[in-house]
Image (cartoon, rainbow, N blue to C red; front, side, top):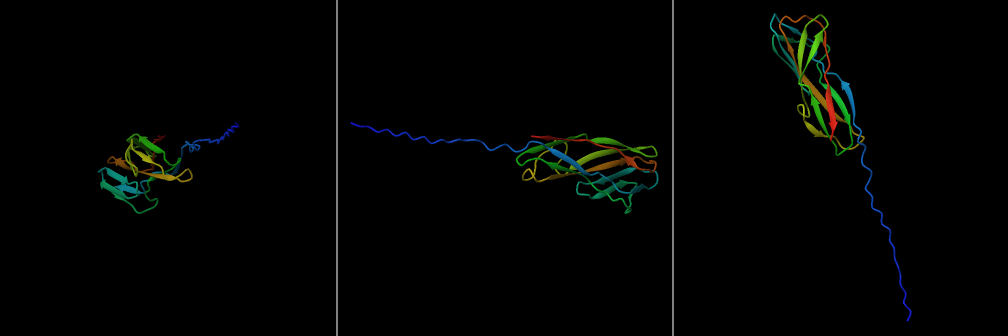
Length: 159
């Protein structure tokens, strides 16, 4: 009796696709700017710029239409699809005037929420997610005229 045995071997290799790039790139593309304004009398007040660019004031602050105009800060975030980003920032910072004086800047909100907010990035590794940031300046009465400047830090953590 003759018996024939056939062996069949089918090789199957299973592998996961490579994970997308985990590097996050942040580019500050526009600074937060409150435009031109002045104080009427000795009263103080506030100037606010929303993350959408809308500007408003309270108290003795007069908003001028002169250049430069108000604008939110803009950050471009590049990180692959399916990833989340958490933003963290201090709620206030101090701006210093060119002729003395200081303003307090309340940072935010952003279009993605307040400090500690988490959001997903757009589409894929080639797209950029934009984050716009507004703020409110607190202007004491009798503040000297000048240019006030300062900086703030936003920490972007990928999840």
